[in-house]
Length: 172
Image: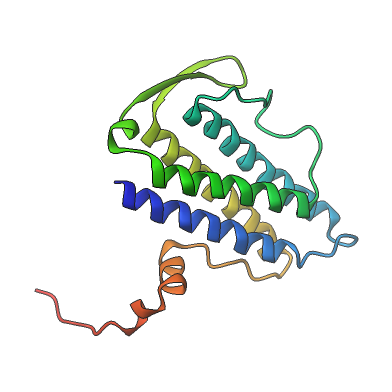
């Protein structure tokens, strides 16, 4: 299970970085509205990732909402997302199987109570981020910008090129 989480969070960091590379192609003047919407979506999934990182680590989380009051710049958001991705990559290296099965009680930003295992939290953060990267990719398509190939298969083959050299063997 931990190996799968390590792969998942390596993929997440790669996919986020690929998305920021594409967002940097937007014209800050003529595509300002689309860039703003994209930054709000990324900021949202990033804030959620920070909230759950606090839950996972037992730290007090400082967010009062699931997004920032002000829209961060592309550069500031990229740096913050990268730092959080690094935190998750280290967390999945250090967490034990026993810890992954532990339930953690927490409070959502709206005041509702919740409880999830650490494993469920990690799945939630990765899937939630993927949903919003997909929304941002749709904005890019509407602007005639090719979105990143945000798939696990592409990540695995780009980061492990030897996978392309495998011989095909018949199955069955």
